[in-house]
Image 1 (cartoon, rainbow, N blue to C red):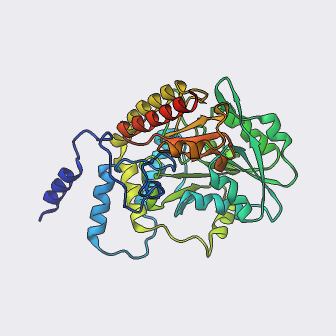
Image 2 (cartoon, rainbow, N blue to C red):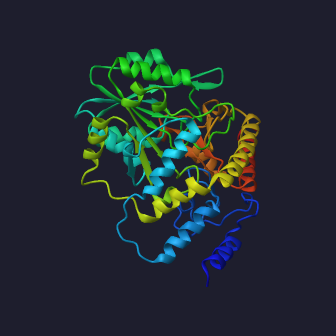
Image 3 (cartoon, one colour):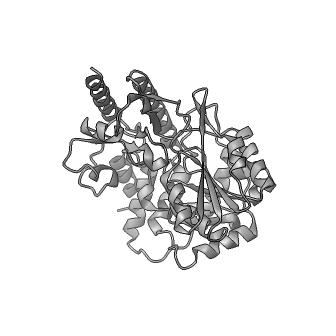
Length: 399
């Protein structure tokens, strides 16, 4: 079979040149899915962990099929073409000019968070972050006997914001790292240039390194709120910033384990690599293949995904507004809704909604008791079914 004919057949099989279908549910039960197998044999719709229920872009599936057909899966170094794609992409999207030598590839972004905490400071030093936040931010410092310092975000004018006064007062002579989540999981904020510049100034003043987790940067829902990489602010900020990114959230590839750090400062980069030595494995061949295909050929799928997620976001926000004693701030980015359930007076809201047939992620895991996170990266019919179950459960509870 010729390569041209093979590509035509692959395109037909995975729907190339057709509209991307996000509406048809994908059956994920009995596939060893972390998300779905949590509720195996139970009638609970899983809207908890942050992976989407959509097939990945056709270009990614096609590239993986071709790589698997090759049949050899030896140790793999980073393809130079992938480095080149990332350099071009960051310049195109953000006007951020980086060099290939600044890139350090990782088998996952959480690995990067842990490497940062191992690389910087010593036992007993402080690592600071703003809460509520993605759970590995809370565990990585303690894995290396660092003190975790949590500074609560404040909700003002229906928007989560930094409390810079409290943040600076929490800094000590032992504070070495600030771990930033932008766009922020779980609150859905896209931080503005002014906010990032203020944070960068505080960190410069106190000689603190910024570890900036930007894995959700491709999931901006508010078109007037562009993502700004922290390290792109100015050379001084870049020199004290470790940026972590990946294709995994944007293109729904979390199971393939491929991420990268951008570290412009040579000394910081060497310390990061030294902390990786002996404990961080190489990225697998399929992870590299998927990332390259996503970055090179996933634009059309990505554009369609964002429009679908914007529609889902509106459905969630409208539904939550109609539920008694529940509220949420607008979601600017990600496919995650951070729902405030404190006024409902329900002792364990996550268990309450599981009993109603909806699996949410407990806010306690993010240092946000009384909240729950809802993943709306799923088919619209499934989302609407889950929201209807939530509404009925609350209506019955408050009768």
